[in-house]
Image: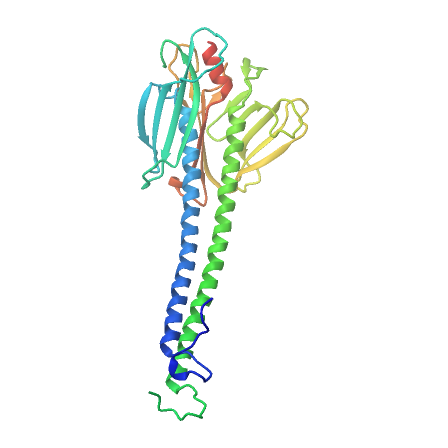
Length: 141
Length: 207
């Protein structure tokens, strides 16, 4: 533990008070602590807004996954695009490499479709959804 | 060193007292402001969490319902068609029970504006046979506009495109798009989902 607080040696032996300087320093420290505390509020609000962006990105990724292969052709490789509200998507289609116990219904091949959506202004994608699609072996439409 | 007499109680000078009081005032103002600010943040956060959670739950429910539409065929005046009737603003389809705890069976769902003029978009359902176990869900409380669109080929051999309506067809549409512009948000904040009914793609693959 720290030694008992003494304002200065000059009052040794008397009831020791605090000097104005000490009080000021204490207030400054308090100010720093409060600032850090309020900063947390802002951080909290920001991450809340971030969660909204994440929800929106998930919704858009699901929309994109529904559309791909039906409205737009599913081509192996990479494709990118933007939604009307500024979110961007990136889609990769690769042949599925894992083991799959598929009943042999003629000629279908499994493809792994991944859609990732990035919130405007963010560097990394907020969400990436992957789906397995069965496509005619002749190649995706 | 000090000029104060050795055995006199040393008090505060008026200046020290004034400074201390001013600082105390400043600190309490900051604290009060902080408390008020904190309360506001708390309130807003609670509201936002609630609305985000509700929107996610609703989105999930709608997607589930639309992706599990049954390709049920029924006899109509103009022949035998799939029980699916979609217009720009309304939708009627058949599907499994709305929730896992509901009575199992084939249900008929209807998505349309509430007839009471409140502007709410409501999804209602009931058992197809006899109309038992009805239920309803307010999809959006105050809706300015609902836009439904259906993607598919009306006949075999025709390229699929988006349609404003899908009625008395022999198959389900391949995609259903629902766009809701509410009274409280602008066009950019419109809620839009696109769902592929699974049975439609199953028909496609099998064909």
